[in-house]
Length: 122
Image (cartoon, rainbow, N blue to C red; front, side, top):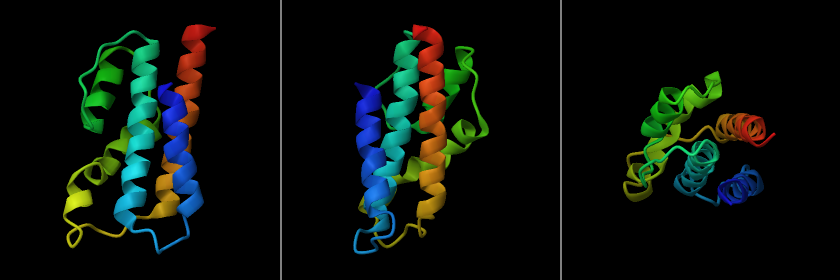
């Protein structure tokens, strides 16, 4: 279920990637959400309890604390964290989002999540 939701956020990012009528805050939010849901899906598959939070750093730390292998993309994911809340409400203060880099990051984390979940479910 979580991966399905992550896929929905990923699909939205892909769909609006080059549409600059859609503000970076919206694209960044869905990029962050795709990563957050992918991380939570891996934790859930490993039966690791996690807090209801948007904090990617916390989720990454929890993944590592539970001995789950991470990739450089996973470690870099926390860069998207400000798009979850902070940049959604302070429209004048956020930097420009590198949409293509964000998409590449999401896709890498999504592949990692698939691998981690398949390793558990066989």
